[in-house]
Image (cartoon, rainbow, N blue to C red; front, side):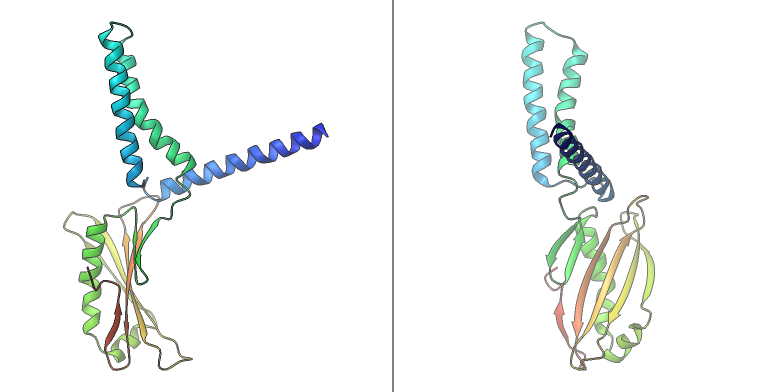
Length: 205
């Protein structure tokens, strides 16, 4: 019985370690993205630490370096705890609608602007010309106003089994500036055989 309990404990601990490693790895891949409430919690913890340090310093106890470590350590611990326990549980994609998704590790406004600029050109194309792209698609490297390098890829998906289905024209924006993880955002529009755009993920942006 003791051996069984010990085995269960070992399996549980091993599973926990694997989960924590996965969480940290995913957090690194997403460019250390954190939700806004984590920033808020970090600021609050820093304020609490500063008040505690001020109270101790006013009473003449402790050392200045201890207070500094306290003020810096509190907010850092918030981010570290999130990275270990929460970093792997948040999707790296911010799904704005069914036809638009932004990677959380990217600058949302810049990504939207570039997707709108690059994908907008293809809305002027005819159905037949877009259909040609369904074979291979095409890519181009661009540099944003902030100096970041991106690759924009256009993909056209056509279903041969149903002639009435519209073309799915997908623009994929990849950030080339990241070394370990390259965030990708995408937007899509739909075009019917009459050349009409009947669905646009960027319509309101």
